[in-house]
Length: 349
Image (cartoon, rainbow, N blue to C red; front, side, top):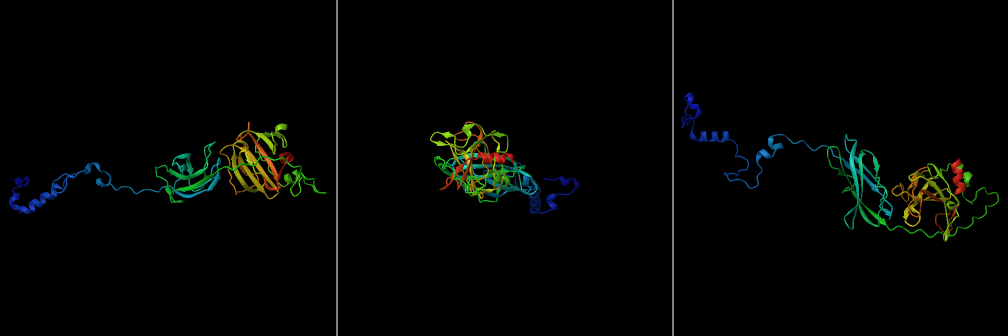
């Protein structure tokens, strides 16, 4: 046989040793076709070279870029049934302003997701609070609170703040409010005492001290049935109703500490109790579901929003049921007083 080079008068069979020719031909032919095993046997399950792409074609795959990282996750570990946890988190990603975030609550007993909050595109580099769906509640039990998300390039959220990007929440049975008791008549003030109750400021003094009216919006005090002392079956009304639109912010009149937040289906609905250093405890009832923005033990400033007015519990119209207690809310020796003179003084101030 003559090769193509024979046209130039060179016989490949005589110009090169046979072993060298064989080696040269092997190099020119290249490696065995993909999918064939050494010795010519087809490899079972092998992927053809032309289908592998990427590096197989000599194009280096780009390294993974930055991904969002959960750098902070905090919440109140225990809340009462009917309440929702106040969850805060922070996500960081270099050069990225927002990431899509979702927070899920999974019942540990059933393994089912019982509450989910899709927060949309959320700012990075700052502490964010979860906005739960309106009207959502939780029954007593144990739950896992988990955070997931992704950036605009589809990069999944990495877990940095917690080993699994989750925390455990315990929901306890809601405490039963004690049955309303008859309100004792206030003791007469000592001679020269300017307060309607010994040891606490009178309405004018409280207004001068900077008391904030507890409803930040249009309102009225209703009729006789909304007053302190109005008959309520076997007891009397222990507060003053402030009628207002649903969703109107409810504010703390003075700085203080939140004693408790809870839910009473047949009475107060969602409610908040605040203890202050001026001698008053305040109770705010019928808050709109999902709007309580404080939790037990939290310090609050005068004018800080606690919830929004609603009509949860035993209420037929949106309003704030507002109580003032002297000596502690339902504490031994504590008792409610008529809030209306205080409210009218704060309203005018």
